[in-house]
Amino acid sequence: MTRLDKVFAGLRAAGKKGLIIYITAGAPDTDTTLAAVRAAEAAGANVIELGIPFSDPMADGPVIQEADVAAIRAGMTVKKFLQLVKEIRKFSQIPLLGMGYINNILNYGQEAFIADFKAAGLDGLILPDVPHEESGDLRQLGTKEDFHIIEFVTPGTTPDRVQEICRSANGFIYCVSVNGVTGVRKIDYAPIGKVAQLVRQHTATPVAVGFGIGSPEAAVEASQHADAVIVGSAVVRHLLDHDIDGAARLIASLRQALDAQVK
Image (tube, rainbow, N blue to C red; front, side, top):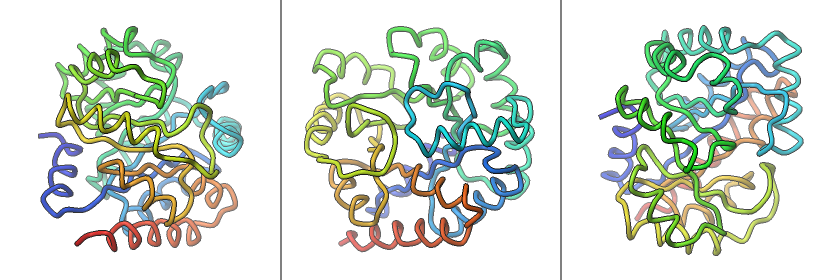
C-alpha cells in the first residue's frame, strides 16, 4: 500500500473523514511552505496537496492565482519543487500530492518526472487540465511506479464517463463541487453528492470533495458526500499574509468539526 492508501484505510477503520490541505509551494517563500506543512500536519491534516506554481492556472481562482505569481516571482521552479519535496521528507511521511498543470510535467518529461519525484517522496499528481481521455500514458507510468494520478468528476460528469473513470481510479477520486474555479464561496453540495454516490457504485476508491470549502461548517456539509474534504484557498490566504498560526487554527477547526461527526 502507498502512503495515501494507508491513510485512507486508517480513516475508514476509525470511521473518520479525511482532511486534505492545499499549499502552494514557495508562496510567499520556501520557508513558509515548509513551516506550513509542519503546522498543517500538527493541526490534523491527513494529506498535503503541494501546488506546483504555473503562470496560467486555469482551474484556480484569485487567491491561488496570486499565490502562483508570488511563488514564481520568489524563484520557485519545478527543480526547486523537487528539492522542497525532499526537505519535507526529512521531517514528515504525510502523503504528498503535486497539484499542477501538464506543461510543467511535459517540459520535464513525463517518465523522468514520475521517476524523480517518486524517488524524492511525492506520492502522486493532480492535473486539472488533463482529462481522463488524455491521461493514459501518465496513468500507465503511474501504475508502474505506484504513483497516483488522481482522477476527477464534476456535477456534469455523465454516468458512462463516471464508470470509465472508476475503472482506473486509485488513491482517491477528486469530486469537484461546482463548475468553476477554486475559491471560498457558498456551495450546494447536493449535485456533486449525487455523482459521488454513482462513483461508489463502481469503485471502492475513496472520494474527496473540493472547491469552495473555507469553514468548518462547509467542511462538514461537504463531508456528508465524501470520504475526505479538500481545502485550499482559505489556507493559502493566511499563508500569503504570513499568518501560519491563522492557517493552523483554521485547519485545527476543520479537523475538530469533522471529528465531531464521528459516532
